[in-house]
Amino acid sequence: MSRLLEIQNLSVEYRRGRQVIPAVRHVNLTVEAGETLGLVGESGCGKSTLALSILKLLPETEAKITGGRIVFEGRNLLQSPVETLRKIRGERIGMIFQDPFSSLNPVFTIGNQMTETLVWHNLSHPSRKARELLAQVQLTDAERILSSYPHQISGGQRQRVMIALAICAKPKLLIADEPTTALDVTIQKEIMDLLIQLQKELNMSVILVTHNLALVSQNTKRCAVMNAGEIVEEGMTGDVIQHPHHPYTQTLLRCVPSLAR
Amino acid sequence: MTPLIEASGLTKRYRTGGVFGRQRILAALIKVSLTLQEGESLGLVGESGSGKTTLGKIIAGLLDPDEGMLTLAGRSSTTLKRLDRARFAQMIFQDPATSLNPKLSVGTQIGEAVRLTGNRIEEVEVWMDRVGLNREMCTAYPHQLSGGQKQRANIARAIAARPRVAIADEPVSSLDLSIQAQILRLLSDLKRSLGISYLVISHDLGVVAALCERMIVLKDGIVQEEGETSNILKNPQHPYTQKLLSSIPRLRTGS
Image (cartoon, rainbow over all chains, first blue to last red; front, top):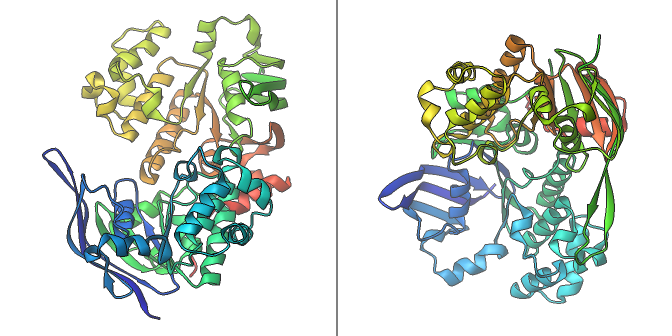
């Protein structure tokens, strides 16, 4: 396996007025080509900040990357010019977020927004390509979806549209930040199954950022547990769940609600 | 024994759209019946749009059903006054940040509930102890508390009115896992020590399993399955319940 992404000694701070909040502290993390990595932690642990810093999507006025390197396909993203980053975003690294409703523009149809993205990525025959992508994310009713506004389709369908957009340029890495948290459990399972299937089809790597340990245990081979800006444990998912070393991981595992009484 | 809650044939329809679009009538509940015995807790399980919150609100008296009968401790709900309903059932909402009044201190809000019971205001501190809040937080405002503390204050506000039933609508959904476990433990301790009944509305079967002896599975406003929680979890009969159970991600302990 070859190394796709290597985060070295990354630190990120938030500055609000005179307050300095360290959100990510000296984090090292690697993602191999074609693997699915789980990044687990509770709110405020820094997992989303870490995910956003990979694409340099953090608000520059508040967040500051104070040190480290993010090497993707041999290039340090933190020192890449904006134009290069703009090409990498979407083309080499795709991202999907928790709430598909706020990621789509409410005043344009799905077809409109898909075409815009496809044209941006210089893909030919955008409207045919849009239909192919919808089929790939298992949305059968392509005509209706394309002519709908985001509020006219269901949450699961919106997330499928977001996934279709994220994979349109066949990225090598997909960052999925709580992709199923806003969805019902039955839909959650469908979306996770779809992500794993696409990951195999496109041979891409996936970083699954989530608070849900069970989701990670079912869908990833390797995982990292974050707490207070640091990675406290990392390893094969099965090992981490069966023999957690760090006290924080142990606590987290004890809190998973069980259906057995 | 008279059941605490007896509902039969509850139906509720909502009108949607209207201003620009076509008006549509959406049936949120269709002929739902249930009973809750004293001291027992019941889970209402379903996904978004299943009607579980509508059902909870009707029982709390926040919504009127279009059809059906609701009997609370042997009396028809239509004959009960607002204050009687407030003393019968209290709500614990999902988002503690928006269900507490941001302009009133925590103590004042719990105090309002204490006054409903006619008890002395000193009882506020007793309730704060019971839910594990520091007494000094009495004068704090909701924004000064963490999410878990807010939900504790919310629970204190609900149970300080000494209701027969507390209706908890997704009581832990907006909290982190470790805080969820604490709040669930608090709710089951309170159930034991106060003998209160819960109506737990949740999409999370784990939450219902932790708090309720019996459960009802709702989908599209219709009861799909009803029975003892442990039986349904072990041996779900309805295809929808089976799908729901198989969709839940579980910790894989084997590698």
